[in-house]
Image (cartoon, rainbow, N blue to C red):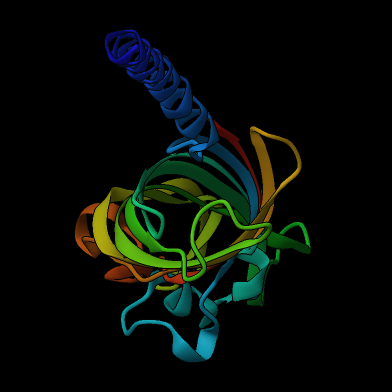
Length: 247
């Protein structure tokens, strides 16, 4: 009887061990299946607003143009689109890289001069294009996977820019009017700060909003470019609607 009981006990232990062995992978798989996705691809569309006239950098080409041309700095505010790739580290941090594009053409005329021959305004087009390429680290204060995920972050940006003035201009040395195009372009580096909020609308999609601040100034050679300023101030705010696909 004792041997039989002992054998049955051994069989029961083996069965329990087998069940535990089979159950462990299932439990692990269930845990893995509940882990939040750690990567996402995002798309954003929004509005970029340059820093205002009263706060722009000394030597800024737009400030210099305001002395003779009729336009406003806020005329350069316009649409911005972009995309990014985010990777999560733990529950509270993620890193991201992104790229975007902003482009705006602003018509202008001379403030106090007209074409005396035709009695018409002397017109130009002022065009600014900026392609920001950014890398950021973000902190999620209530963690990933919450019903709503606020975040703040900071990083660095490389801003590829091009500025041009095309149209009619006045040579004030002899009051002649001529057509020409003046351009400058370059790359400049500056800090980026972000803050946003996103919420899931399905297992893989999230939507949200983001506010982004960038600070950057590009250098201009007035002699080579023919422009009036020695800098282009690219500092400003971008307000965006965001969509992310998690995987």
